Image (cartoon, rainbow, N blue to C red; front, side, top):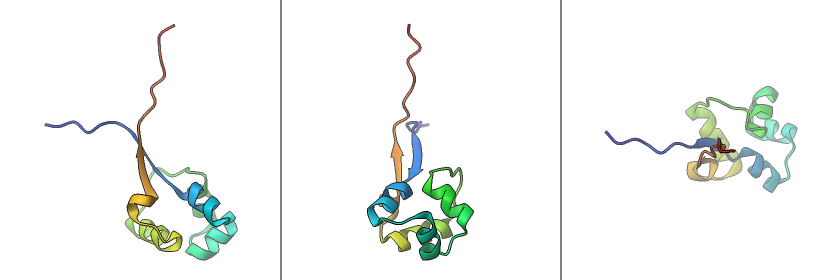
Length: 81
């Protein structure tokens, strides 16, 4: 059995909002998401997301899934001292 490399999966929403110059309120209006959801996405405070929301984000930001979701290597803290 192959083991997948560890890492952190995150959404690029904060960067995309900055590129567009959008506030959370503007993002909420453009996407049709509730303010609490838009706020959580804007601050990368998300642990789960539906395919419907992923599609909505891709549409509103005009990006592909690969541009919206990234996998970053996990940074492990050094225990040597």
